[in-house]
Length: 265
Image 1 (cartoon, helix red, strand yellow):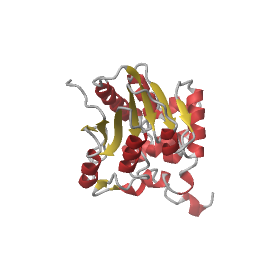
Image 2: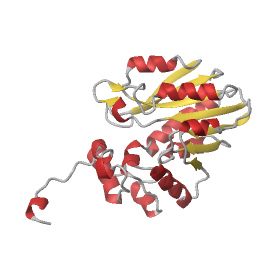
Image 3: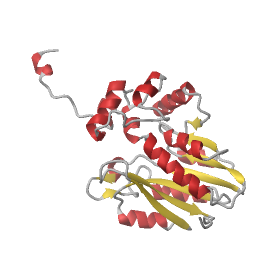
Image 4: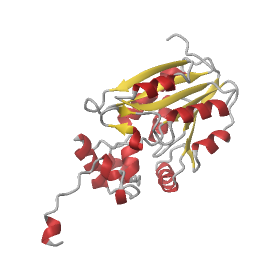
């Protein structure tokens, strides 16, 4: 290393760095995953997945790309989401065991937590990106987790589904946000890739007999018009936010039901 290189400041491991350039599809070293947590959230263990801190999951052979480290739903958040989903599902008047589908699975960590809180449910994930799919499949195998993941797009995956008329279909919907997240105006659900409302409408139209519970990941600040438009897709909906990060950096979910309404709690 020459003097010029040694004097260069180290890059900040933030969302922008890991979603662009070489780091986007690169497999992160343990130190890099921890550095992202420190630089972005002041916590080396921020990227905890599958119930483990980074040092533990890395030791077991789990690996994440830069983009997956940013886009994954970490343990604390995924656990909170899964508890609220299980609470809503318990109020569904349907006898058959639930089918839980993550339409944009990524690391499949949300699916992992949903399966922990939904006893007897079947878990299935779709992941179009071949690299992410390959790495996630390797991670699930390394941990011997009973989760099925398919290398396909959400439309093809949905069309191949077969659900009983009395089977509740729980769909976790978290497409890549990309430019949809603005620091000032928040998350515009019409600008995700693909748009969330497009996904919900396709799901509803493709599975006309199935009672649906859609679980849409949102941000603390959401574009009001996009949220209002999404709510019109459901018979019932409720918004949950989780105060796990600093104010203005938190995530949440919109729960929405189609072809059923939860019974009173």
